[in-house]
Image 1 (tube, rainbow, N blue to C red):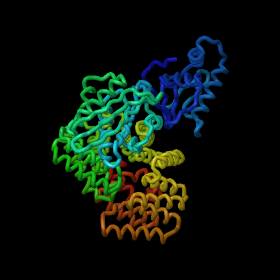
Image 2 (cartoon, helix red, strand yellow):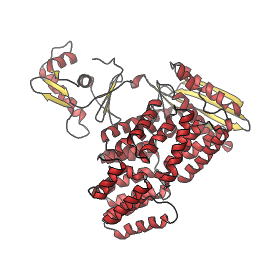
Image 3 (spheres, rainbow, N blue to C red):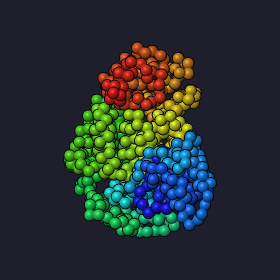
Length: 574
């Protein structure tokens, strides 16, 4: 069989990895015998035509005389393997009197996963606990992640997937196995005044052997030189074959100002907490960083990302946050147009705020092109695809995103949301359960779980999930809105009105997205008020209007003329 090709293949929920000789369904391995794998590979590689029976028998049993019944039994077994998760066989079509044809759309992916090295950089640990600097510990990891990610033959787990491995006694190889990587870079870091000590080590996950280690004692102003040295040593230890541009990327510096760098790390540390006060604190540090270094592109990208998150997480007026996000992203790209993070933030602004779907996708695809293993960029594309109703593409993007970021809460939660919008609730619940194993208090996961239970009319479970989301988010208004929505559908009009009044009271103190009030009125059956609040959401450019085409909470209101008008004006229907 032809397994020498560097291509892998994707179809439906499946990924066929040729060199590894394995089949994945939604990221989980499907058990196939060697003969079944060869049969599937032949059909997939020749998906554009009918494979004659004689051709298949010669390909599968080249040195053995077999009867046609052997082929029939093999095809039947393969069909069972492809449908073991439920559903009808829609992949292999029998062509009477001739043979078989593979009917699914097949996409070839040029990079063979077996040739790509996967590495994780864990947060560095303090040498002395009392003097720890968590921003520097995480920041050292993030900087090295960014540098090593410049190499095309390497998949580097992002900070969102590794930031939980902060325990002082964390076993590097165990973390590597959980992250599904070949090697792990970890170490310790300590700053005392103007001095810094860094110890770094690279571990082979398979046999837990040390590939390289070194200790650096320098002045803190030389932290960039330490990072240069670590990046180059890791590349050498992993025998990376680097182009001239990739070698430059290993030592690329976005600033030469060490204090601006430290302020940026503090901003990144707070941004990662994903709570409204922390995001705003992160903005303050990013702003201080660009004041110290006005051409610090990465810090501008941090400002852009922080502001673009505020409307969806923190009930900030879109007209206040998104223009600032756009301005910062454009400034970052003016300085460095190869910055994937800035393209990604700009992409969100384009489709979430400007409702320019084409330009939004263009920016997100550029981010993916610049950083192919960036799972957050893949996830961003997932959201754009899903909001437009392009569910098959969105789900494929979602599973690619979790391949790169298996332990990211937001990546997993957004894939679950997409599965739910695509009417695949069982998969969505399983994905959310995995997300809550990573972080039981992650409010977005509880919010999405409640949405699933609401559609399933399990209102008590839904409200309990929304209450947890409200608690863990610090009172995000969408959680309150969904409590009222589910209560109204359950017939508890008193509780629904309580939620409605709570939002209206809050609106006298801070901005409340009009969409979240409209949702409760829709469940109460008040069409006039629902339309009025949706219109207000349109005037405000409420970010949640981009989700209404696919979110299940609007199913009962979807046929209303005012709803259809909003869809059209937002650009979600022609």
